[in-house]
Length: 176
Picture 1: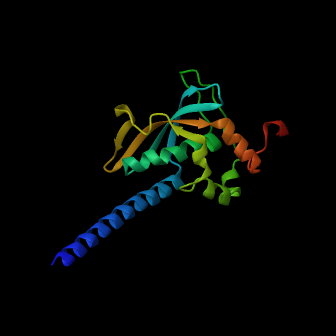
Picture 2: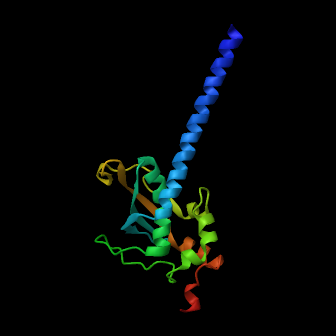
Picture 3: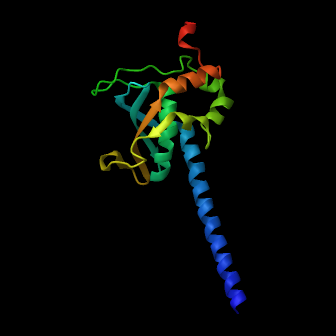
């Protein structure tokens, strides 16, 4: 009888772990699908002297946690492809690192790897509030979607150097 109870308990634990891991993987897949849409907004918060920008990135998703994770990718994507808008807090408008309009399409394989789950984009970001979202930065949009604002620091100098060394963008000294 004890062996049967033990085996049933073990089976329940395995099922629960599998379900939990599946749920996490499904959330990651959802984040990747949401990220493919690149739906976000950027606001500059601060400029640091080390070549980093502190930005607030608003991401959209049906899952709040997915939106927070997605904000990291969106912040780096914004710096590369959209630039950073001017703000009231002393941030000067920054053009995107990519000067060519179809650079992302032209280097699809590079960016697919770069923005993958364990991609290199992670080397250039820091969540300044450890992923905590202020009450005023969490909005429910419609029936089942959230707009979540997260403050992220992006090492633009390091990101530029990485993209230049990979041959994705030209160096500042190479001209136009």
